[in-house]
Image 1 (cartoon, rainbow, N blue to C red):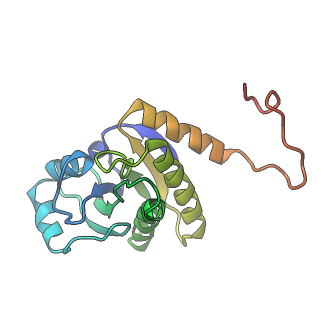
Image 2 (tube, rainbow, N blue to C red):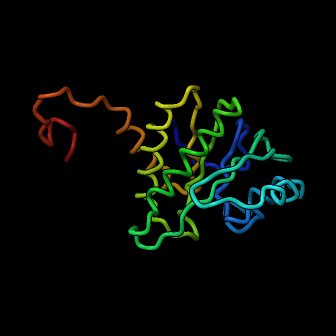
Length: 186
């Protein structure tokens, strides 16, 4: 796992993930940028997919994009967190990685799903993304390299912190926790 700050439509990877709406026919934000950059054939292919449910994902060709494929996933709209939003968001990452594995893809780039117009709190969404990707990678029968493609510096810093913390070895069982000064905390 790694995080970068970039425009996801410029990445030459096996698949980029589109934070789509249920129609899969384009919209604003990342979805609109991907449809614009890919060209009209993407919309034509998406019409044949008959939409997508929240938390699920579907794959298409990438057309004019440098990526080979687009995995379209529909993230949840934030309604305060008590309406299954975290499960739906985790399913977006899990299902996208499953599809990548099923199609033999080796590299995938995710945007910050649901954090734009859908209103999901960015830090919470990042935690779900990193945890779900880590857990899903352990269960997949293939190895997929994951890039979290952040549009803002703030999002990038959040993902970098979470990835770094994820890379730290877990404390040994029955060991005493470190004090703040020993662990590098202020």
